[in-house]
Image (cartoon, rainbow, N blue to C red; front, side, top):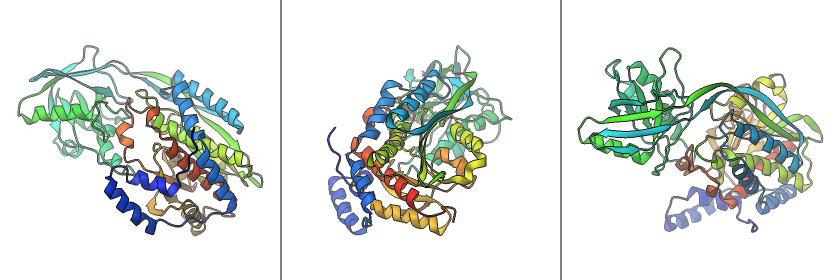
Length: 472
């Protein structure tokens, strides 16, 4: 592997400009030279950053996980093999106090997934079940389409009137470096079956929650309300949603057949895999870096979240290789069962409830493998934020005014008072691949991975060495 030398500021600029023309990039580069903060680093930080830029740990670890294990659906044998892999990898890298903290999750297995337009223009559609969804009858459902351009249109529709129909909810997700369009677009995935079920629908199909134009549908977890009978729900690929919209725009009644046969399989084991670098002076004080080990079953979980595992493991390894000894304990967590409702995050918060006061700072890498372009704070106190600003200066990156909870699995402990921060990655293209068969290792850029490790190891060292209570 060639030596990786691009600086963190340069890679951040490349990520932010990934969708622009060469002329626009040149103009932005000139402007960035004036606005990007100047780096302020100690010799120790400079040493760590050089080692990180030259490292291939994150890239190699992600390759290992996605090649040797592949898809890792929560609760399955594949996720169990991933836990064994993680413990062996932590031992190989030299971590201490390696362990699995088990918990149980509701098991769900994907089945047959087919959809087709029966009339007026017969043809196949590409669809996938949403996580946790119930099945159609084995023979499928045939029904006319009731079309809602957005989720809000469905929510505002009168009760009744959809009896026996298959609801189609469209609505496009907007691209943004920080994925700001995901929350609004995700409402239809999360609650579409409930809203349609209230109104008598037989099933739901949605435009995938994604930003691509590939003929790959995006899966993801959905929810049923307890007081509404569950109905099947699946996601169409974006081109198939476009095709269905064009057909509907012709003003004819559109009838489709939908067959999806997922099934719930009862409680299954999952777990959080933990390894540590034990602190030299304050070993009881804990800094968490993490990713999540599970993935959806359509791709190999490279961007979501094999990259986060590689970055967290890789940053800790660079710190060990440097010979520097952190004052505080660095705890690396490979969370389980994130995709089906942050089960690993909640399990960790419950198990460690009596020790959360000793958790100094926490963060998670779970937004792909794009370059880090800013630092976000989930720290309330002035002293802690001063340290985060110093970390940003050491990276040559701006501090964002946008708050953070540190990442999905950090949320449960953040809500219980643990300070958090996030190294914000450029996710402009992340939702092109998210939860699809296209989330594979070839989407990982080794130079971006090394830049992420540079950012994370800088944060680890500076947060460990700071004589600061991040709660103040």
